[in-house]
Image 1 (tube, rainbow, N blue to C red):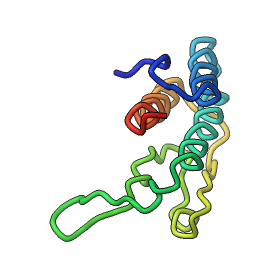
Image 2: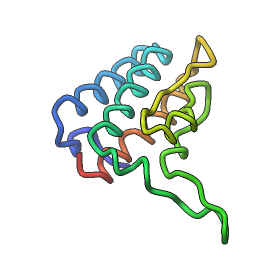
Image 3: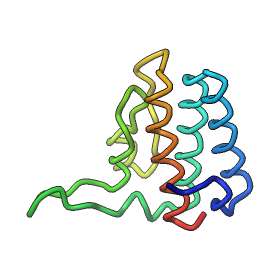
Image 4: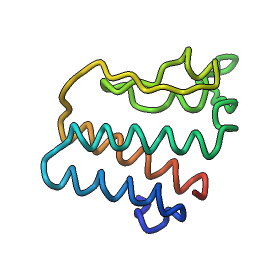
Length: 115
């Protein structure tokens, strides 16, 4: 598992660390919102991610960014196609386990993209 100190962009690292603190204090909902903003920052820094695809099975692919967890803070496919990504919140509250899922995904994405 990557560590926040592996994120080189100070602003992005700060958002990820803030989300970690929010989770530790039991505020999972704020953590998810912070991480959604952090992921949108990743996409703004690396817009080429919006064009990358991943093969699900032979002949079937999907945009790589749509691997973002859809646990109530969902990345809109239409917004990805328009190259203006938006995360839509379909729930008001999140569990810590859900926040951890978003945290791990965001942190791994930032480190993988060398941000």
